[in-house]
Image (cartoon, rainbow, N blue to C red; front, side, top):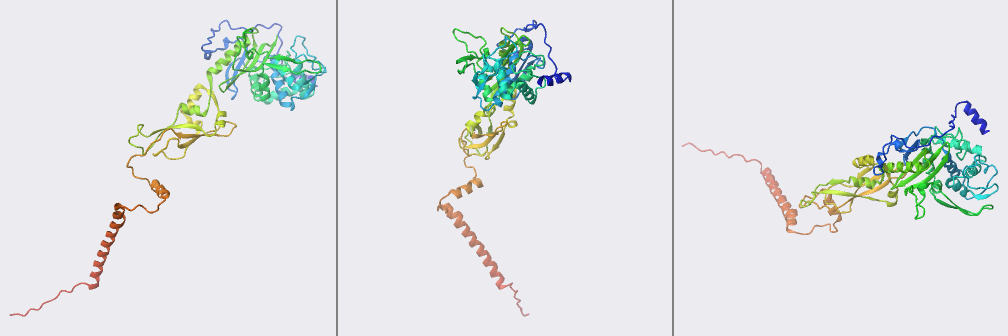
Length: 483
């Protein structure tokens, strides 16, 4: 049924074919490439990579940091198993269940293909099959995953293509669960980066692909044994087994190789809160895919950093201009504020991943990233440790994180400054004795002067009343006789 659907799709021009070439030229550095300077990874150029196609993205946002021919169709080889293992993690509820290996599962098309060494009729924990597909790149393990998830390999391939379409992969088509070369089995470096970013969000998948050594339990056919990851970036060098490609920050993911695909590597690395995903397709066998990936990671870590909102704040801390401060204050009332998380556990999870230039811009324009609110005015007196306000950050998909803005020092009030109405009211409310203490000043101001004023007013009023009672005086006329 799948073959019929695929044939119809091809005839309709829906699924293009990636032509299989007779001869595959070796992946090598461009003869015109400038010499790579490991002391300055930020100067990386596309010609300094062996891979024909490569991409580097920042995992948190999916931002493309570096790319080289990332949209060209390529054979993915066993990096296909990223999708296979991820769907096994997503679709099987009990990964510890015992599954039985079928005859079909162990029938791989290529005698030279990598296998986990499974045998038909073998009963094995499904989790061991997941590890076998990821670490040992077992094509037989990939077939078992397909049958457990979808009932058949053909149905699983349909599911694979449906899933990557939901991720937005427009140039990817799978024709098997393991990655053996097929003209209708292809992807691009860009699409593979999208797929891997989604895969790394699954905790079980992260655990599996980040494991270097894993113990396979004894089954009804096979005795217990240990498998190791083929990713050299994960292999810690020892005195007897050196490894110049070990990358301490690497956390997975999957290798792949066929004649058509050459050597592929999809990998991830994490350093100080920055997580990067790199994809190199059609690279060199001897050292190309390891060297390409290391150069990509070094470039990414030279461009990106991870900071907390407190880090941003400390790059450009707030200093307030206060008022009513003591004239003897050595800093003339300037009040630096310290940023302290209300919930340290929540604050530790709030991180901002950005380029160094973006971080600097955010620090210089802090209010574009956080909300700052003040709880009081900036008038002295101010006590050291007093909460002056708050700073709130809203991480995407998480609850807001609140920080206190705390006074770093005490600032005294100006000497002999008139008391504010608020201070007077507060003093009255806090005074246990509602009556003021008796003093000469109190008697003069509140008793003598008001009493004298009252007496003066009374005397004036009495004089006025007395004048009205007698009325106006009539002038007396004296008649004098004539002599």
